[in-house]
Length: 231
Image (cartoon, rainbow, N blue to C red):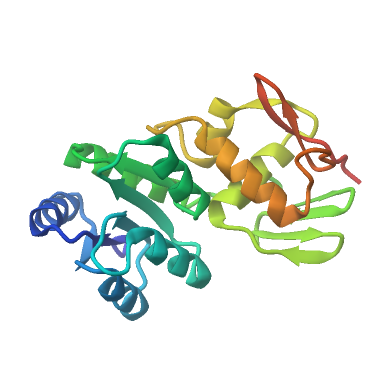
């Protein structure tokens, strides 16, 4: 089996060296970059399975790199930040990150999160039926495609996993923790409010009004549910 490839982007030589050593010890192939521009060049040369990306980069910062990556790919991204403020985490998650770690962090925890994300990136295909049709919505899990009123919808891998989880039981209320277990994996370490960020993005992609939703409903204090019925 070909080892998973991880691109580590950080301007601190010591951090890159430590993460390189830990990831290689766990069997990963590692690519390193110290700037945003170098990261995008390396990404194009050897597309990775996952990117570990520092926010505070010289020149082109990590959030700009993340936005550019999202234009090119739905590759999984774990952000590294030296700032613990909630706004930094929310901005990063809104821009398309899948997880984050605040510096200083344990290299072992970073490796654990990389493994958890990559396990999520390789679904077996057995959890959901290949295709499910709802009122104005079609979800094809085998092809990982979504149609809204017969028009294709562009979703990230994580957004698709969230929608598929909700669609597995229409009308059932899923707690944030349950959605994390299904979309992120049971060993996800982060803040459960990451679900809210991605639900907002999913609603926008589906053209669903959060103030008057017709596809994804909010049950305050509990979680979310799929409102549309099977056809």
